[in-house]
Amino acid sequence: MTPSSTLRDRRRMQTEREIQVAALRIALRDGYEAVTTEMIAAEAGISLRTFFNYYPNKEAAIVGRRPQFGDRTLAWFQSASGPLVDDLFEALRQILEDKQPNRDTTKMVDALLSQMPELVPAFYASLQILKDQMADLAVSRLGEQARPDAEMIAEIVAHATANAFRRWAHDETMGVDDLVRVARQQIVRVGEMISKRSS
Image (cartoon, rainbow, N blue to C red):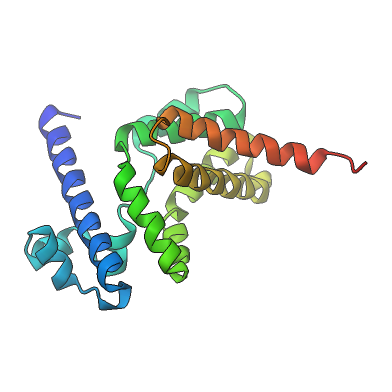
């Protein structure tokens, strides 16, 4: 990637974030139903045409950019040889390191979902590309016959990461590495609960 393309990518990511924050701000203030694309564009200080260059509708703007693995991370995974779940979490850490998630934006999302839980499915749906990629990565290790198990692993990892994100948003002492560690620890605890014999 050239320096100019990197700069363009950063500018695009910044604009995407500004649009999302504007959409969240309006939704928290006026309610989701009151939000329009025109209002979001005005709040973000952009034209409606520019808005549609980034997002197709208000729901997409509120949810924000759909996370997915880039070519560099996919290539890294193919050459990695650690335990499957550990390598999946390392791949997630690389995404978070590249994206540099914003704590205040995550707090706004959390607040909106508390007000309007009916939007939760839209946010989880935004993780589908990432979950599909994780399942494919797991299949590359386990074989196609293990796809049902790979899809379950991807679902669990994504869910644990989402839980850790909410904790990270409200804990100023946590960094990205801590977020990944907390998600990994939750999976370990769940595994221990599943295997524990009743007394």
